[in-house]
Image 1 (cartoon, rainbow, N blue to C red):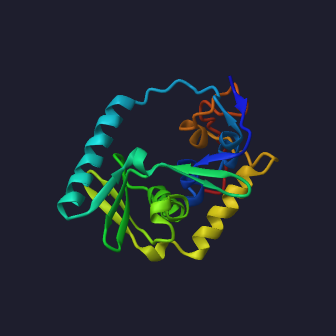
Image 2: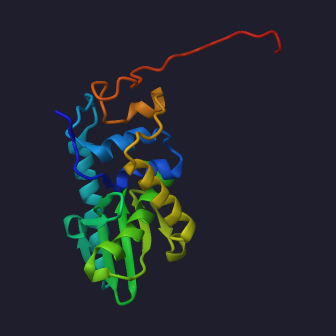
Length: 215
């Protein structure tokens, strides 16, 4: 049964598609920030297969970094909570690798490359040196790894413009007034909020057609 949170709580993964422009429904993020234990729609996602593939990719990345002399911290070791005036930002990068002054946040993705993956890593690059004591004040570069390729994110990718946009989005999701709702088949397809909590959820795409004599 859905329950209200005492204070807005936001996972980094809820922000990346919105910041990258791959999703427009800020209401879903607002709802997750303010509520917990909501009803989730049925899904045919094979979580066991995903977990095995993701774990294998993470282990491969860890082994390769360790062979290069990095000290590597994995998953739960990297969990953070960053307290702000309006909300708590939480996350868990797959890997943090450290070798001297070279600090790298690595996230493994089993699917196709997407801009929001890099945005997610940038969010980790922002939060880790502010939330994790051992990395306080340090600068990270980022690395998104895929089964057949990778994307490098330089330290300079975390600029003032990104930080301002990240902060503005978090403030909108943390606001007591509900954020903008944008129901559509494409928005709702992968959303984990069922119609019980979102009556405007679109379960099937409505195809609208018209006619014209202009062509």
